[in-house]
Length: 353
Ligand code: UD1
Image (cartoon, rainbow, N blue to C red; front, side):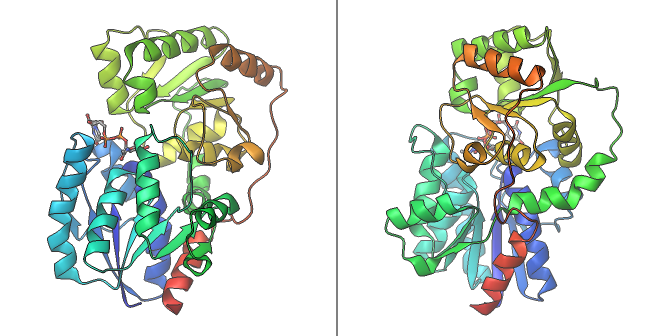
């Protein structure tokens, strides 16, 4: 392999691609970076490039928001000429966002090999748009880099040949390890000593008015025991306003840059979230995590880590929180290969190919 093209589009992609870009650069291979522009707000995109020291993208497709079909199609239309022009030996795609599946579709039809970083994860819930993206991307990929053994097992069960699968560990944890010292020295900025950190953006939680109202009511209940710090995704901010919901007892912030968010996670008494990556980061940090989803594509965070799925059972959220407040939280261990070197392993495999 001489020339690798990377496609990133949304906030979690930036965190995953940064260590791979660095490792490939250190090995002297040529690389091209394409930003689809799926996330475009400064605090959802630029800040991440700066803090994670990601080079300026060679191409920005500026697709912006839209329905799933519109966003995916727009990325495909704008990405195809870039691939035809760049002629990479392989395209690397990350995670499970619309940019991931769109780029995989384009490259597979142009007979450009596709490598999928964070392959094999399955929630077995096809109502989640990301699950569709994961299944299709893995099906089209030629090289599949998995973060944990459950990923290998899922792919083998789906008939993916063993030779295509490489267990490399978790690239998101590479970034975490790299920037944790900076996060630990972040000023506390008037945040309380003890707080619950909340994030919410899944369509199933925030696009349904009744569901979002119930969640905010439960969080308001929690806030009587523990202050809530809640950096709000733009999608969730829009929905709270649209449904006219009450959030006055919650400390709502704009989306927070990576290092500051890591600092908040590492100091939180508990994290309440519906994100995928945050389930992994809290497991690495040993911070209790209550996940507002009925399932997870990252089961290792439950079997080994600090994660508990509370689904939409508000009673269970309150019970688990009480345990944490009494100091009886679930203890976890770090999964194998979540050691800061996943990007190096990927780059070494590509160099050999
Ligand atoms: C996307 C991913 C999701 C990932 C999340 C991380 C898909 C299907 N979903 O969800 O898996 O966990 O990113 O954040 O790819 N918006 C802004 N500014 C931005 C970006 C978005 O205002 O920079 C608003 C727009 O109104 C947009 C909405 O947020 O319509 C949703 O953005 P979109 O990229 O469609 O999906 P996310 O919810 O961010």
